[in-house]
Image (cartoon, rainbow over all chains, first blue to last red; front, side, top):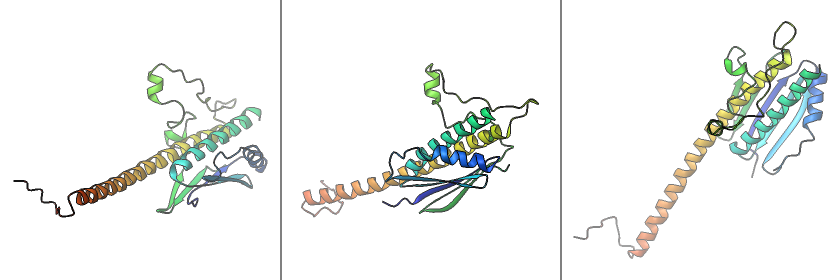
Length: 82
Length: 126
């Protein structure tokens, strides 16, 4: 089935380096159901761009919420170490 | 630093945009309403050990820029979760209606076959 349900997320960091670090940290996370859900991370200047594509809204909700949790952990770690 | 932004699309909804409103209480906390244990579990006595930490503050007591980002992300996450949950409920309702009408059709066909196909809905046994 086509991955027709999508969500694009843009997260502005303080510096391009922080956005790049976030991409490097998040990208290795394995996708548990690659046939049903895809996620792509790109840094554009200081903005982290995340593109989600999914088979339906249920899978999209689980995937998006999980990635945002990971992003929040990355942001918290950066904040604590800065 | 600007605020996070998200946009959703699906075959039956061209676009839905999520915008962060920093003045809204939802975007001023790291403790989201759609994440963590449910109220049912908490009321049963469970202690939330994974509760998110408060946003970090600087020497002047102001929330740091990254702390604000974490708050904005929490609010955005709640917004997206609520929206997608609502869409799931709508999809579930549609599916149920479709299933109901399909079952009703099959039941009518079976009844028609069992009655020898001469039942026009007039069950007058008097």
